[in-house]
Amino acid sequence: MISIKFPDMFSISSTNLVTEGKDKDGNIIPGHEATSQNLQLLLTSEQGSLFGDPFFGLDLRHNMYEQNFKEIWDDLLVDKIYTAITSFMPQIIVKRRDIVIDRDKYKGTLSVKIKCQDQNTFETNLYNIVLFQSEE
Image (cartoon, rainbow, N blue to C red):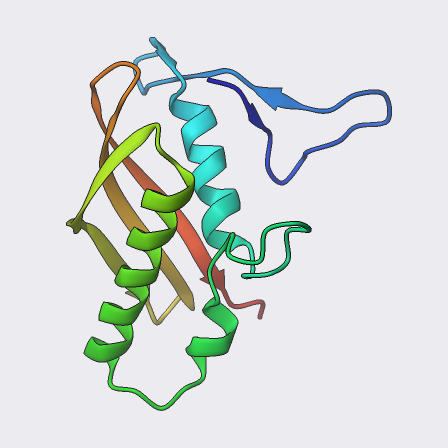
């Protein structure tokens, strides 16, 4: 699997691509880094920001400041993440219960942990994507 390297997508002379990654022991994992980059691009893009596809990405900024209870907002966010992944990333299989929202109020971060199965290698991988980080 090949992915455009996010956020360093372009250099002066070429497009930066990711084809494989390495685990903590240094073993090569085919497509792990590419899937991680694709997930990060999908989940951190605003819906409608990709030219030609108004449904790509999450509408995170729109829903972040609504007055909902934390549990309701987390359920809405998990539903949006699940829908986005099943719609735009057919190379992985994810179940709704394997998407966990994680907040760190001291660091001011909102992240999501996604456990999914890769369709190419049939391995289960865990991805941690930072959706929001306060800039203090």
